[in-house]
Length: 453
Image 1 (tube, rainbow, N blue to C red):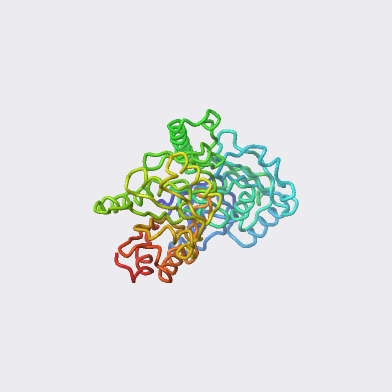
Image 2: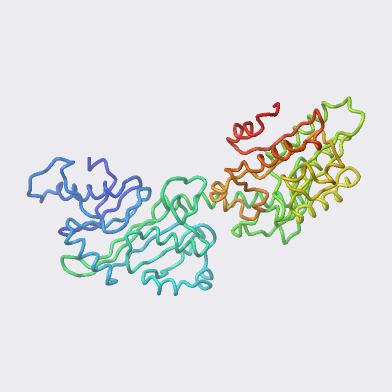
């Protein structure tokens, strides 16, 4: 069993051992391995017990299953207390390597109350920031907590550079989910329990950390090139082309432009960035229009929750026998929609109105423009729980247009209630089409269960 474990003895003395463990080995297993190594030595004079009968040793420091790291272990509670006494008196120093989000430099620490944090906790001192990578931080601790990794995560998160991971006070990476936190003990200095002389044990940065950094750096470079290509296509200014993605500002907000359905629209942080997936809603609307070729009058379209106006304006640009209005509760978003309306010279066919999902069916201005043959709607449908996990990718966009209560279904409920109370705005043979989130089909069908699909 011991041969099957990837553990290496880095230092040993009577009653104490420092092991280097591979990823995938948990605390209980490494404590068993320390006891097994002692029994497996040629100098062992006792009776060799069965595997499961071994008395596990005690790990002094925290063990992260998903990471390769150093672990100090002792064989008795007395030696454990001796080590903890050394820890509490500042005689034990651990160096911890962690992968953090964002570009980290000295100014991060110069502009924070790091010294105050250290004074308050008597635990944290910054040793160095890695010069070789924008993705790593090194910390040296002269006091050890049982929950040291959680403590580090909380403190680094307070500096806006959360550690990559899937536990409290961390931010996950897309390709590294449910794998714990990306931090590991890589060196230790402590007094020998046998001679009281200082022992130093170290190992290289775990390959897993370096691999993650290399992969994320490659992804970062590719995303930067994609953003740059997008802005070049939109003829963005030179200053916009020199973007810094570590600030997490999407290229569309830097350039103020976004291509959608083959047309360019003005966008700001008051509006969502149009997604390629939403072009499906435009296609469905155009398909509906094309099937109404027998209509003698223009087909009347409503874009409910219009934002930048890109859905309504794209439909009008792709058809000739249509007119419509866009409705939104956000006055700044409507201002952007008006700008796009003027840019595409559609003011004679489109207008934009301030109203909400709850009131659009009784708004006098909306009612006077009806009835509408088709309502296209891309409402907010991200639940608050999901939004918290998506924070990095959506933090620049308006939450009003993204997040909805009741698990993401509130907007659909409000629209159904409004239409059920007063359906004058919709033609007798009219249709409504929604964009929905993944896995929400049955929920939306249930809300509109009294409608014909």
